[in-house]
Image (tube, rainbow, N blue to C red):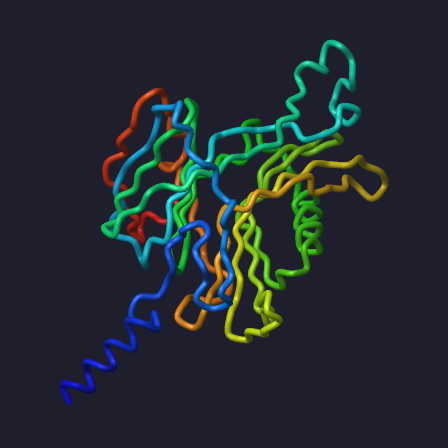
Length: 283
């Protein structure tokens, strides 16, 4: 009997059933399709910068898979002729054509202590990925919120019809400005529940793929049918292959203001202990 229990425990450990969830390690080979996941997804730290963030997570509802930070950047991704003011000398210099949105991945220990290093000075927001949910403090909008219900419906419809690879989609948060020159940002989760084919043409019916990304959209004019919206850019934050032990389908996401606007200068900022208690979710 004792030997049987030992074999069962060993099987559970190797199959991942006892501890589901694969930590985010860019370039690691998926145990399911044997492909490398997210090898170029995250921005490398700069050795010329001395800024950083560190802290520790407690009360996680499931295994913590990764901690990510993004600088608060709002690049103007329109062409000059679509920007209010056009190409006039007065306004052309105010158009930021930098389309880069960096994502930095923290070093994460087994006891859920995390640390970022090599971060340029600025404000950063955190994204915490757990096995069955996520927490985020992403600032989507720096101006007064003015999107209408019609805008939101139009934006959702555009995102649902885009990238049919993912057959399940959910827009967790949408914020922005309405009107002819409106802009918006969306935090979206997409899951492929249909069979996945790997590079060797093998079909996997028990594997799903989940992607959580930031979508930058802007209006493309109005008319009798109202304002239309177009996707200008997406920035993937996480991408996972989900095998039999993992939580499948869409998972809940919780906005946490305390994970937003962390100001970094030329040193490591210690956030102390961050609790992920259930009663704090969504506050």
